[in-house]
Length: 247
Length: 198
View 1 (tube, helix red, strand yellow):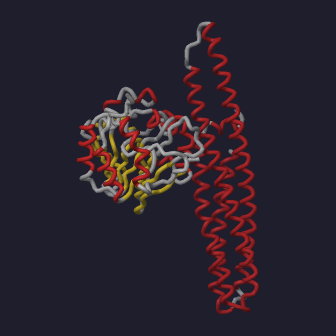
View 2 (cartoon, rainbow over the protein chains, first blue to last red; view 1 turned 135 degrees about the vertical axis):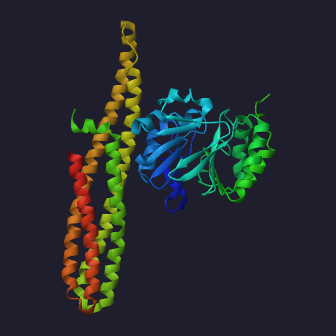
View 3 (tube, each protein chain N blue to C red; view 1 turned 180 degrees about the vertical axis):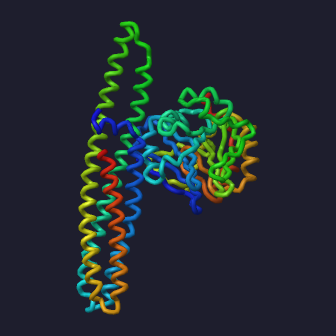
């Protein structure tokens, strides 16, 4: 059963994660959905696939009124990221969905109308959430060719999409990375295979290392905190990506 | 369409009920503390408030029962939200399949069993949602009955507070707090019950 847990709270400004579902069938990749709340407005980052809509919706509803969700953010075009779009729009047809301009005519295959989408240009953009500014940070080719992270400068949280993702074995279900060296083994294969460009990777590492980040929150696996954020960026910078095809 | 069937597709209606129940659960979490406070004050007052001590002890039992009943209510509405959301998905999928043009006999023959399977699945989900609503209504009635008991206890506490000597004002304040909280839960849930019956 998916469950919503708050990972940051400062008055009416909150971040929550709808984390790992231990009951989901094994053939579905496990995902984290992130909810950013500011006052009476919320944004749901990578709302997840259609198959898990009821699990995500009920987990959110247990803590937060889903009517307050006004914006969706899709880091990229994958089905585990945004194929539930039509169901969220069924619930609230006025939702706005932020996504890379590159996928502007692809993601509507999951649902929505011309009014639903807000295109993010390659260089990124600011997204206003009830007076709070969130930043869409370019992460192109990591792994999607039109790919964005979401940075909250006030909370010092970076939602990093597939960057930082780890495919954790059962039994390693913690919300946060507790032992970096043990954890990163489960991230290595994923990053070598899914991330296709060393140049894009180094560019991302250089830009993101200049941001003040307390938590780096991936779409799969555990959240990096404190020193582990820098550890991850350094590890990623040194990793040879696009190199996991077996000869 | 019967009332259960009309409710199944209405995720917003379920969400509204969920928000009311969440509000009531938040309010009720305070009853436990107030009841504990009442017991401590009664203890401090000693012999003068023996009657109040008896009532406050009953209030403590009531607050524990209320906590359990609220946990049950929370679990039931969670299941209802989950099942209603699952129903939205099935309705969405059916809508897409239903819109496939089936003018020719051959196409109709392909689509009919697909739609029939889907209808069977939706029938099961609809049945589950009907059972969820039924269980929720029963639990709602239980909580309302419990609140009536809580209200009576709070009134008794107010009467006993009069005999509390120099602690009388404090005891009365505690009794009022409990009565106000129980009344708020009672009126909110009663309104919800009426709305759900419409």
